[in-house]
Image 1: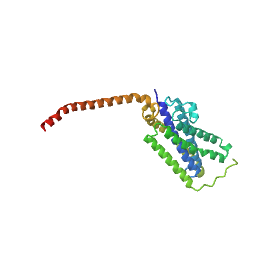
Image 2: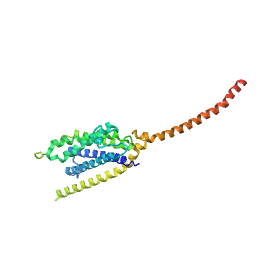
Image 3: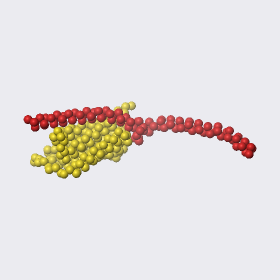
Length: 182
Length: 95
């Protein structure tokens, strides 16, 4: 009996969560037009986009490993339909919702020009909901959520995102840049 | 052209940062893979349903060892009780 699928699922989930947190932090920096020495906005945006892509890769790995795992017995339906899982249904449902919202944000990035900046931006705010759902999903569905090392990750993630959002909220609203006809 | 070189430098920095993020993610994955071992339902540390399969044997062996411990103590009590049956009358006789 090999438990590698379960380990891979947990590891991919934790790394995806850490990357998602990093992506949210970079996004808040960009939205607040923070001036970082030697880091113009286009460079930060480039890294932000890459972190988002890598988050998607690890989320896909997380779901794929769960589909292979023989303990939780996750089916494709259970992975895609909130509440369909027999294993911790509520907490897994939050993960499913986060996955689907993340996919929606990803698709909106591809259709950014067609959607227009305002609509794209509104959809992009869903990333906060993705992050919040992923946090609760990890704490509720993760079998090692009580482990010290994981608690540190959650505390650092929640603390840093809360601080970034507070910084953005307290910062005077930047003058919106002139955009094209979109 | 200093502006152009600054943009080039920023591009290079972004490229290096992306490489570092990918490397940290890969190393983090390997590290968490090891740490996640402790949380597997088969390990018996989680409240997942699979625990019942593995813990049955463990709990029965624990019960057995507990029984043997308690047997010792009851036997000990018995051996202590026997001589004490004789001593109280002895004290009453002397008093």
